[in-house]
Length: 310
Image (tube, rainbow, N blue to C red; front, side):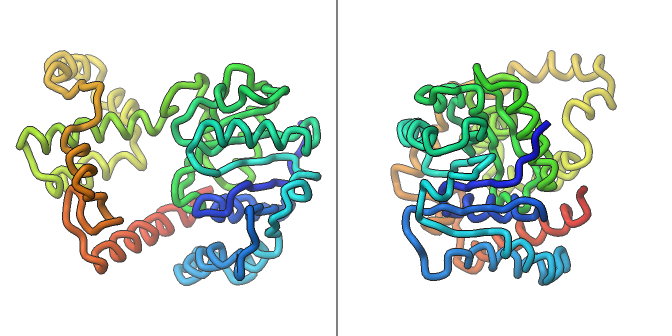
């Protein structure tokens, strides 16, 4: 199997900077981070991430310097693609923009370069529809922040080749990620489908006056959420016994939320302009200090639990 040595990241926003950092962890990979315009300090966001990791003893200065030395920033699209073995886009979540991007870069790339999309929910098959060689298009859904969350969903579109899948999986393992195969190109892939199923039930609990938002979060955080990092939900079912699991499901599933429309509460909040951290009010009210503390707490937790993950 051929080895990927040159990675190009298209888009230099929050995800793009994180992805460049992830791939540059590999000492034998050179990364080009491409943006439509040059910036005063193009690698500033990556440097800030690395400084945080160093402050928590999750990375040495030598390792951080090595990562920065393997990332090059450019606004030249053709130059960024000329030697690329693996191209990943993290532009806006707009189907036509993603389709046209892959169509336009195909003539600029080597014939065996892999095209990956970081979309979180969109159809990989549809994104690939304007390319000539659809066998090299694959989904690679990273989770934010990508340099801390190990999971990457590798999604097989209708015409994605097995070689493309295997090369992508191997590249991600080299970058110290935990890639999982999604064998069918379905909306939301794997983890987002699970996440939204929980969100739907959580909002239903609030809407029906069973508990308030803070209580719902507390119940998850200090109950099942504690087990999930080390005990998957299907492993848990095996642990308690499938006969008991069937008995519980036979009773409970008819009472669970099964609406196929977005939450009424969610729509009302958005219509009022209550958007969460963006506005200081969502399901709960947030001060700037609370927002900063929540963000910092998440990053510090993720650094600690993934520090020794191999």
